[in-house]
Length: 171
Image (cartoon, rainbow, N blue to C red; front, side, top):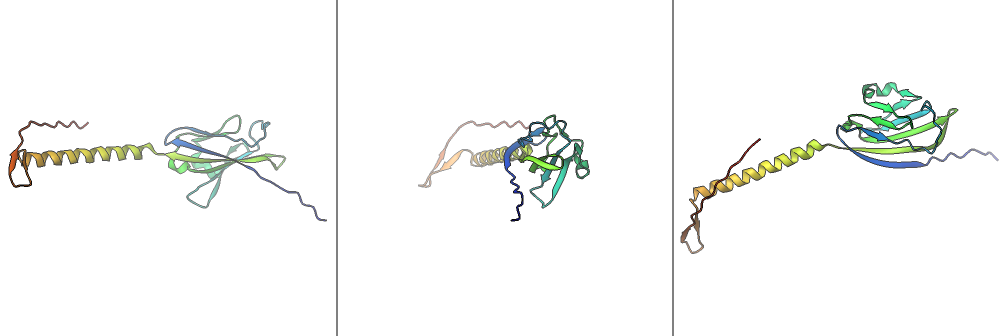
């Protein structure tokens, strides 16, 4: 009989949501406790918008593939990946792998990172408020043009006298 070792990789899935511009720490919970200085830890990024997998951290240092992000990436004492000033470009599936003597030890730690861009919501709210102001102004203009007169269904005109003022302060 030809006996081959069976390799089983378990995945620990963590889903993190963060806000654009914040700092986030991605845990490396592979089940191994004795990683001294993360010299045998790899962090990979699967960009969900492209088929590429990029090494971010390999063998104790930022990988050449991640040099453009090196000022925002670091690894903590427990081998967690720290990303400063998170952007939309950081969205993806992060995988932490730890090794001993060249062999993977423990399971893959997988973290899915989502980034919420607050500015989209702020812009949406500003647009909504602007539309409401325009609707109110149009209604007031129509009211003023009719001089407050309302036409009944029987054809008679009823005059409604009221004072109405609208003050708009735009910051």
